[in-house]
Image: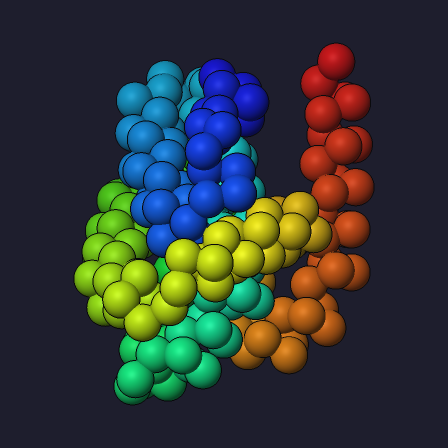
Amino acid sequence: MTEMQHPVPELMKEGDVVDLLIHQHALIREMFDEVEHAPSDRRAEPFRRLVRMLAVHETAEEEIVHPYTRLRVDGGTGVVADRLKEEREAKEMLLKLNEMGPDHPGFMSELDRLRMAVLTHARAEERYEFTRLRAETTAAERRAMALGVRAAEAMAPTRPRPGVGSMTRTLLRGPPAAIMDRARDLIRQAMRK
């Protein structure tokens, strides 16, 4: 399955940021299933796609969604602090898994731990952050955020960066890391051909 096999419906391209992120959460759940069900000798590629999706998704949330939540949602600072803690822990697990590689004997048990952490985090975002964003912002604000998320994803690093959590650090370190990550991705892709 290629990255293009997860199309974004037309209405989502400029739609509501909450709908967009919930859709991405569903894609992430599917990607975990792909990695889990892949034969061990073919697990590397679906895992690479999962790593990329998680890294890009979290960076966009850190750059666009969380800062907006802090500003516009009552109690948003606390909501975001909890989500950033969960994201940092998941990034550390993802980095460990990435370093282990899918051939490592402990890979599947670590993948299960990561899946639980990511899915718990996604549910918390949907319940505590996204619900409040939808209630306390306008449709126009959410459309603008969706466009911002798309732009941030286009420039986001494609590998986990556990030490990057604040918006300032993400904005300063993100683009150079993204360029390096994307160059590595292109080199790997060329070597496979």
